[in-house]
Length: 359
Image: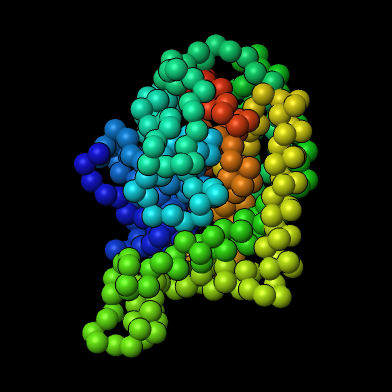
């Protein structure tokens, strides 16, 4: 690793426009965002500045930039890679993973970083001796997530994804639709649980122990207040305030506790789907990369970019974005999701799809 890449401040964003160092531009079209929060990593990889980069994925922050820039982005199974040295965003979903220009490269990098780290107690034993030894000839039973083809999906994206699914059918995979209605609640669930964890994790940035410090002989409470006022941007503050609100007395049961119950339903819905299918597929995002500045004044519209990725994060599942046929000249990513620890299956189907796309 030779450099740092730009990202949304504290990884809070879907476009890399919330960075204190300014926005990153999309190499495919410099008037558009590269996705976020790991947009700088995706842009550097897409430009060939490095053969790979690492990103953090809390709710789609590797997969969305990969989709928007035409790169490969792998979010591994929760706990399969170390987060030692990474500033926590949401501890129950944060995962480190690679962004590359080929699936095989992603497998090689994942093989290096996967496994138990004594410095991170959440890491789990790797399930494969060699993740980079991929057999792309295997045939899988694939479920197409019906809820990800609902209203709001851009026609060009839908066409590109359907073409890719047809390639898999023609290649001999058994492909059929699966309905997972609980996924409709995933985004609302995510934006309750994750801000709550953000508020907790960032409480230590008080000017005494971490981060910048606005001391200057001030009273202790003023140091806290002035440091957090200066050190966090508007999106950071928005998420911290939402998190403290849903954790506060009188709202904990109504919001946070209920969201955790919905999260359990999402896990059960995926378990049910994987009892029937080996892998699940669908779009990474309902749109191609949007224009710089287009959604900066509309946080809800920005959050909708994550609508198809957050469910997998809440369930701790491995998922990958594979570039497929562009739509209106802009990159599109197909998302392949596997059951917990089925990262190698995800990589093998992704490699086969890339081979079919390049044939």
